[in-house]
Image (cartoon, rainbow, N blue to C red):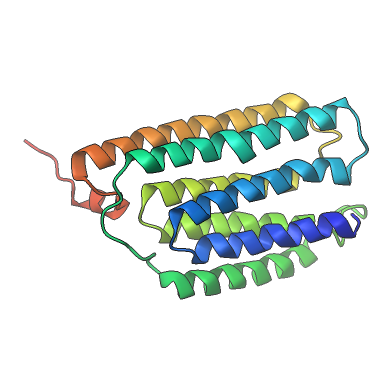
Length: 214
């Protein structure tokens, strides 16, 4: 992998930290959209140009960079967020956790028994760091829409791993992963709407207060 893809992957890592540290939902949505666009461009920069790569690029740009952020902005307009809620770890704690996860990802990637062609690539630690960041976002955020963004981070990390196998990976495998992602977004959208209607709050921790009615 040459310097240009490496620089884009560094940008992906910086976006991970931005998403963990921002308190503005619109900034987080724009950041995940930017990350999706960056990941959409990467296949063209890593692999030789042919129709299979071009189709994946266009599909990822449309799904990650346009459609899913548009759905999230639509959900944001329809739901009243109410009071401001910090993550369980706090914003500073989230940033520290993200930085530690990135360090752990690089250390773990250095010990993996990778094929010679994949050794030393930034894609492997970047993928691990993005997946760990997604877990942190899911676990620390209390608003459902932020947990959707954490889910997107998880999928982006898996996609980065897939970049190493793009030329040999059938198109339908990637299409199936993205369709699963879109299905997950729609399900989470239903949950967001229901929470807003029944509880007038986006705090998913309040669901622990639910009790069975006899």
